[in-house]
Image (cartoon, rainbow, N blue to C red; front, side, top):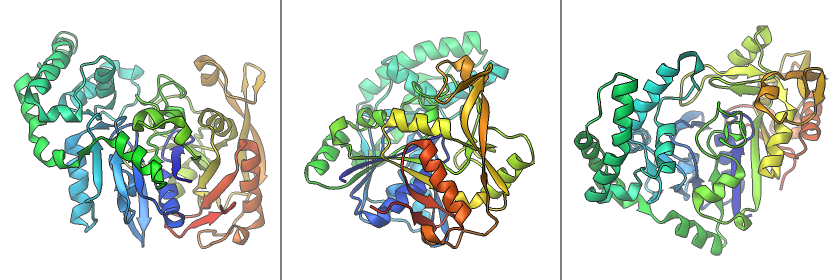
Length: 428
């Protein structure tokens, strides 16, 4: 299985880093690749009781012998990248094997400024962005005034692109938002300051990855955000600015679709969401509070509380379909211990009509109410289980029921944050 994709099958924060880390214990991973998003993502990995959080860096930065790749589809904040690298170096983590695509677009400080000002201006209609400049950077990319990593090494090209980007941005800042204009010289000077440290990391990553696949080496493509945040297939407009679905991996890494051998969707045993937007199974009662507390549901990158709800099999089926999933990796099953009955959303009702699949329109999804089946719960602490057979019978039945409802086999189950707290349901 030389090319494996790991991606989120809900609204993010599913535990993709844990799935990636688990693969590294069963496969020899040569490359771990980020293909979309920016430092608005977040992965938490626990190794030997020590917790690590990655944001822009692939979680594979902790995989011995693997090269971490930030590919062309990522938007890169050099400041955030260096801050994250320095934090890992301070903890004794070896990060020498990191490469960055020359074609990746750069998040400048003015992108963050525009992001935050725009969100404040929108008021109650805000999208719920992280304010880190991701959307404005992608907007500049599409408008063809974006700055690429390679441009940092050519001052003439860099200045021309920054001038073009700020020509429009400054009109918006001064005339609409009543803010000060951003000086071109200051923006260029800041971006040039990153070049010396960044240049040794820069490569043609599409060529690098295709050559690795030609040699039969294993490349793990690590998703950021998730299916329901995809700009095309998610709950638009409450989405990210890129394509974190499986199809986006090919564009974001420069590899063809025939290269992909396996697509693993990571999904929680319940559901969470950060930010604004519809969320049919969201809970506003004691059960929601309990899920939030036991699950420790605070965003890794944002620090914002996550909204909590029951497992949504409609979302799982949708994610399986649009990604062509071969496997699901179920996380945080241990959080559900102590419920007598565990509701699972199997369909929606919209204006009296049952929907077993995702409603077609935003309006329908916004008005969807969940149709639940109630599965028997369990009370045992399962965090010490190390095989699927060690789980309580009702926990096993819950997993197998979700597998049937979701339309994709569940390959593994997480019963705690640790690397060793993973059970294989269908060992390869």
